[in-house]
Length: 125
Image (cartoon, rainbow, N blue to C red; front, side):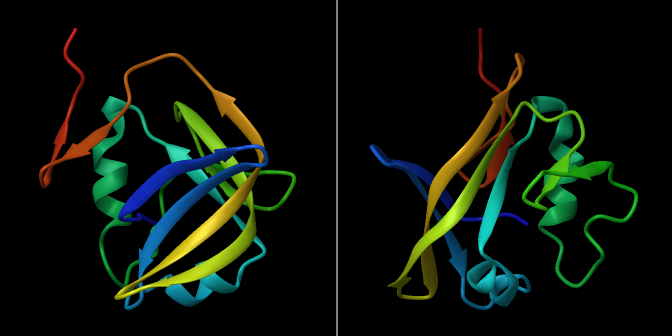
């Protein structure tokens, strides 16, 4: 699933926010789940990002993933993951802001996939 925003909020306690559109197909699942995982894709994973933005498909079909100790889907070959316990929800107009308390992280080296001004981009060296 994709979100429209991801942002660090606090270091103590460690909090991040994600914003999800209220008419997103995964809205109910995400806003009622006890937590979530943010998968940080590599620059080579644009097709996975595009797949997860498609409505009404089995997004995980043919996509390699494992489950974390908390049961969250962690995609294969990602650059990083942030596992969060849902802290609180806020109304944000046509979106809901989900505040998550970071419980676990993992980071690998590599170039991240970026989405900027309506398209995918890469960091220049």
